[in-house]
Image 1 (tube, rainbow, N blue to C red):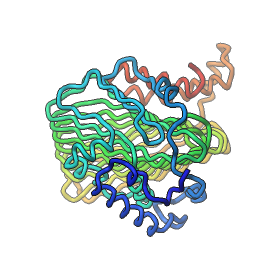
Image 2 (cartoon, helix red, strand yellow; image 1 turned 120 degrees about the vertical axis):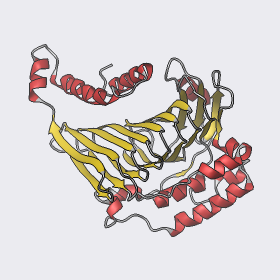
Image 3 (tube, rainbow, N blue to C red; image 1 turned 90 degrees about the vertical axis):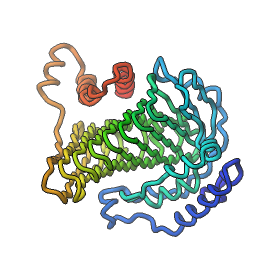
Length: 424
C-alpha cells in the first residue's frame, strides 16, 4: 500500500487531465489546512485523537471480488445496482432504468458528462467543520457513483449502490453524486460496508441536487466495521417545490463524523432529514447539521434518534438558519436519546438563527431511559430483560422508519435494524 500523501490514484487512471489538476490543488489544500482543535466550535465535544490518519494507506484492489458481489444483496426488486470495492468498479447492472437516465461510475461521468460533473461535483462549500477532510476526499477520489435523472422521468424501482472497503488500514473515498431534473423522482439506497473487521478509513461525500418539482428518497446504510474511522459529508440542494427525504442509518464505525447540509433555495421546497443510530461499547457518532432556509415558504424537518449503550458517545450540533428573505419558513429539529447505560454520554446542541419574523421554527433534545413499565410488561410475558431492551430500541427506531412512504423499502430497513439489534 502507498501512503495517503502520495500522488493521487486518479493520476494513474483514465480520469481527465482537468480533474487531475483539481486533485493536485485539493491535496495541497489538505496539507495546508490546520487539523481541527478542541477549541474549534465546530469540533466541540469531539474526540480529536480519532483524527490521526497516519496509520491509513491507499487501498489495493480487493482480493474477494466474487464474494463481495454476492454479498451485495438488498431489496428484492431494483432498477439498477452498482458495486464498488476499494474505490474500483466490481459490478454494474441496470435492467430497468428509463430512457435518458445516466447511472455509471463517477470516473466515467467525469469524461462522458463533464459539464454535469463540473457543475455539481462538490459544488457547495463545506460549512460544518470538515473542510480539511473534504479536501482530502477530493484529492483521493478514485471511485463512486453518478446518477442523473432527466426532467419528467420517474425511476419506479429503487437504485442500489454498494461501496466496500477491504484490508487492514485501507482507505476508501466513496462519492455519490445525484442530479434530479425537474419533476423527476427516484429512490436510492447507498450501502457502505466492510468486508472484514479490520481498521479502515472511509472519507465519503454525497451531493444531492433536486431541480424544481423533483422528489428524491436517499437512504444511507453505514455499516463499516467497528474499527473504522469514517467521515460522511453531505450537501443537499432543494429547488422550488422539490422534496428530498434523506435517512442515515449509522450501524457501524468506531468514530463517525457526519455533516449534513440541506439548503432550501426555492419557494415551496421541502427537506426531511432523518437518522437512526444504535451505539454501544466505546463507539462515537458525531453529527453536525444545517437546515439553511434561503427561499420563502419552505419546510424542513429533522429527527435524529440515538440509542446509547456501554460507554458510547453521541454528539449532535444542529442549526436551523432562516435567511432574511425566507418568510413563511416552517422548520423543525428534534433529537431523542434513549439511554441504555449509566456510562453513555449523549451531547445535544440544537440551535436557531432566525433573520425573518414571519416563521414557525422549533427545536429540542430529550434524554431518557428505557421505560420500566415496558420492561415489566415484557418480563411478565417471559421475555428476558436483555431482549426486552433490544425490542424497545427496535420500536424506537421503527417509529421513525414508519415515516417512509415506500412499503418494501420500509420493511427492508426494519429487517436491517432488527438484524443489527440481534432480534431478527
